[in-house]
Length: 334
Image 1: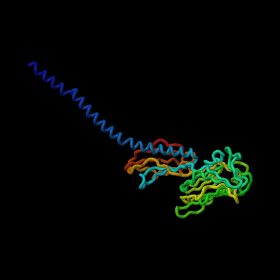
Image 2 (image 1 turned 90 degrees about the vertical axis):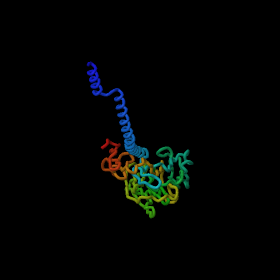
Image 3 (image 1 turned 90 degrees about the horizontal axis):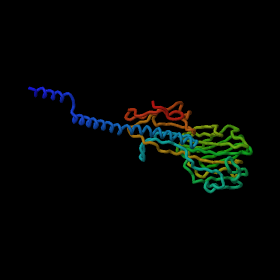
Image 4 (image 1 turned 135 degrees about the vertical axis):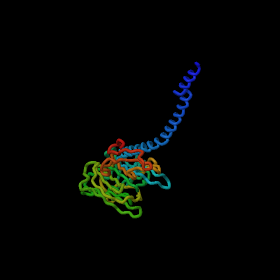
């Protein structure tokens, strides 16, 4: 008679909960399911996040390149070609030709002199090129750089007399003339790749002063030709997109009708493209093409962008990342 209640009690205990073995099995199953879920997240999320981080890092690097070179940097999304997948590209300026006019660097810079031209006079930084008695200075450097996609040119000049004449002759490519009125006239040859024409850019009168060093800068790229003196833009014009390849090395002065004065720190920068992150086929970046322009200080160019630029990354029309390109840096996500 006492056995039956004990059996019923045992039955109730088994139905009230799980055995240790059952709990272990449930935990293993849950662990497997959780592991699959985490693996799925790891498989997809880092790719999306990685793309966003790569794009942001590439843009920050573009800002840095602008600050270091002192030239604007543009970022675009380039279409796929037979040689490469669709990807971002930034157009930067690399030092391609220079002349410091220091005697120790004359051979390396490939300087050649005619007439009374020389180096050794006191310049703005060390010694400089001396054209006060006429003559020419040719700058060979490492050969003729490719400047067809754009260039920047920097030089310091000092005029003791209010004379006029050719400051720079670069056959088939660029000519700079200084006029008695203080006007700087720069002519670049540009076109569509088949037809080229001379484009003349002139500064206002009295832009150049006598008896003082002044910095002259020219930039031709993105269908614009810009002149600045002492860091201040003095002239700008639209030009065709492609520059004609130069047919010779640059020559300062002119044996017959050359400018008279001193020149220092001559530098030519070539505009070249640098490849960035690859954009997968099923991913779209807005704004389309991602056209961004950073000025020479690394800030979002106010002339090209009236305000901050929201960047949205889509995968199959679904947003997978976003941020805002501000004037000074990338900002908080949207």
